[in-house]
Image (cartoon, rainbow, N blue to C red):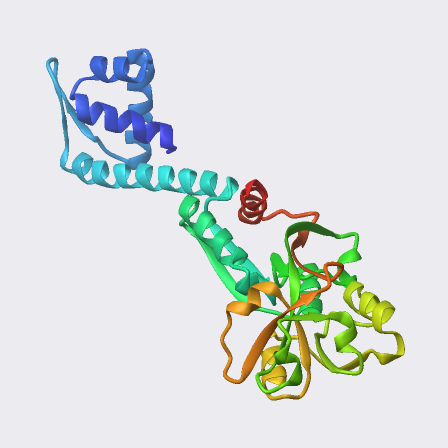
Amino acid sequence: MDLRQLRYFLAVAKEKHFGRAAAALNIVQPALSMQIRALEEELGGALFHRSSRRVELTPAGKVFQVEAQRTLDQAEFARHSAERALRGETGSIRIGYAGNAIFSGRLMQDLRAFHQHFPDVEIVLQERGLQQQVEDILDGQLDIGYSPDHSALSCTSLEVQRLGEWNMLIAVADNHPLTREKTITLDMLADQPLVLYDAHDADERLTVKLSQSLGSRLNIAHRTGSSLNVLAIAAAGLGVALVPEPLEQVHVPGLAYRHLDAPELKANLLMIARKEESNPAVKTWLKQVGKG
């Protein structure tokens, strides 16, 4: 038997008449009668009591009616589910994030907008260091990354989209001499033990600009991959942290923020993904975020 035969059977059961059922199905009555006979022969017995005026279900036909309807409903559900999955309306997306993705509010903004339009897509959030995001995306362990710019993003297998850019601040212990200044210049950071994200290695844009400005008086004392670690080190008085402007909203006991007068130093946020992406849900995410 096939789904067509089940639909034909249910039409006859509903109309209790072969002629009316054939009209509802938009087929000729002999073709309908032939399909019902073939179904009964396969099952090994009659599904209908036939008379000149009407057609009634046999006891076996009544049992078969319930199961046939259930089968068609399940087939329709399977079709609908597959279509939604192909459109990226279901499935799952694994997102890695670091740094400014949270404190800038951009990741939450994207999550809210996407969930509003596609509530049945499962979102899995995982905090990841900058280099680790790239490795995990290329290895298939993550689908999307929210990351500041760094050298590993030059990989030709990655798609990179710029989401935002912000000025830099310094974060220092609240008893540090620099807190007496409302605005800090780069010259004031000479010889100061600086705290940077581990992505800002010697070849990174921020480090290069600091080196150009401070020369031999550039003192990078600490590197860490966590925004909270950066702030904790600064609050402990172990160094002066350079952080993106959105982090000013994060209150840490013993920590003060000051504006840095260095417009050439910028913090940014990028979204990274595989160029050759096959997951429909991930494609939908990239398209949705691209609209924003």
